[in-house]
Length: 147
Image (cartoon, rainbow, N blue to C red; front, side, top):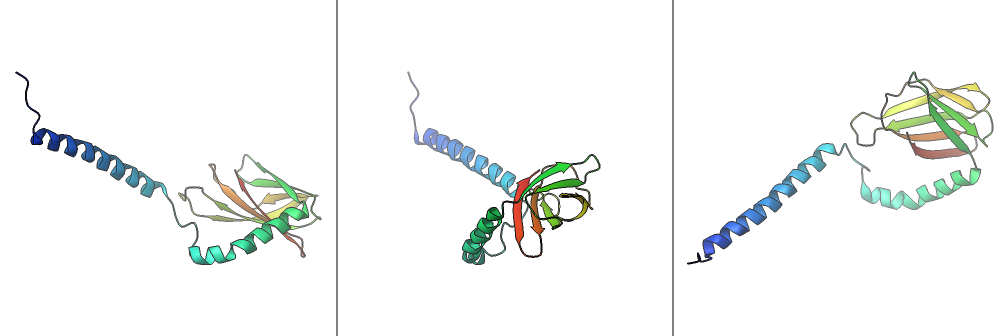
C-alpha cells in the first residue's frame, strides 16, 4: 500500500525550497556587499545634472587628437609616451583600484625626454584604473585606462 501525500509533506517541500532560495540570496548578498569598495558618485542627482558637461569635455579631449601609451617599469613607476600633444605638457593622474581595496593614489609625472614622462610615485602591482590628465596651458585632455 502506497503512503499518502499529506499537508506535512507539502510543508516540508515548501520549507526546503524557500530555505534554499533564501540561503543562496543571503550568501550572494554577503559576497556582493563584502567586495564592493565604495561610492561611485557622491550624489547621483548632481552627477546626472553634470553628465552632459562631462560628455562635452570628453568630446573636446577626443578632438585634440592626443594619445598616450602607458608602460609599467619594474620599479613600479609608470612611463607615459605622449603623442600628438605639444611638448612639454603637465601630466598628472589618479590611480584607483577597481574594487576599492586600496586607497586612490595621486600621481605626478616629470619630463624625461621629448614626449615622455615618468611618474614620481611607484604604483603597487595589481589592477588599476588610471585617470590621466594632460594640460598644455590652453587645453586639457583626459582619459581613463585600465592597467
